Amino acid sequence: GEDVEQSLFLSVREGDSSVINCTYTDSSSTYLYWYKQEPGAGLQLLTYIFSNMDMKQDQRLTVLLNKKDKHLSLRIADTQTGDSAIYFCAENPNAGNNRKLIWGLGTSLAVNP
Amino acid sequence: EADIYQTPRYLVIGTGKKITLECSQTMGHDKMYWYQQDPGMELHLIHYSYGVNSTEKGDLSSESTVSRIRTEHFPLTLESARPSHTSQYLCASSEEGHNSPLHFGNGTRLTVT
Image (cartoon, rainbow over all chains, first blue to last red; front, side):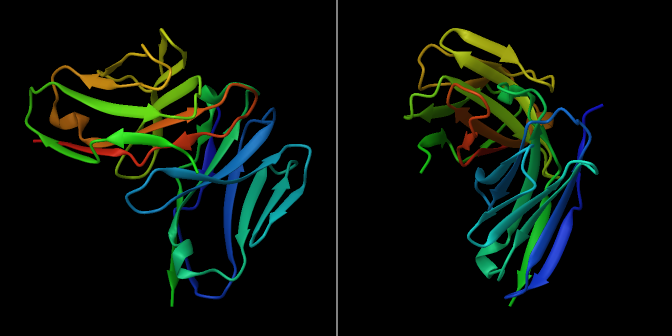
């Protein structure tokens, strides 16, 4: 069945790079997303990548997609304490139908000063 | 900045009470969603709507009901709250069209005693 897997916890030192990994199972996925959830808040879209791309960069964020291995990663450069949050990976295996977004369990990122 | 609002933010209520969680968005989005988020962070889609007078059950069975009488308003009702309903409820909306990102409210944390 469809599944998205993420490691649950990541701890980094302030100023280092963080890499959050995600694997998915549906090869028909057209878009893959990264959402961020700060404590006590809803989810905020960070970035997304279309399946015909290998990489997308947006300021401190770099998304890498390995379609062969069905592996997605989010790299945060120069991680700050404000980046401490839960990061969700999600795939859209059915283009145009957000109802079928498949979510990972979220990776809790802790940034230590 | 997404304009989607949920009230109340926190609610503690006794077993058997009827409650309505409010969700409103001012972006004119046709699609709206309710997610239930477990303490372990996993997101479950419980209801969605693609427009006025259109509501569908999500992937996780829920005893709650929803209505969509106006585009901007998507309330969720529990006729008789139980401790098993204790959770965080997140409302989201998105534009029509392929792969439009979800905009989330800040959530309602419900505790049923």
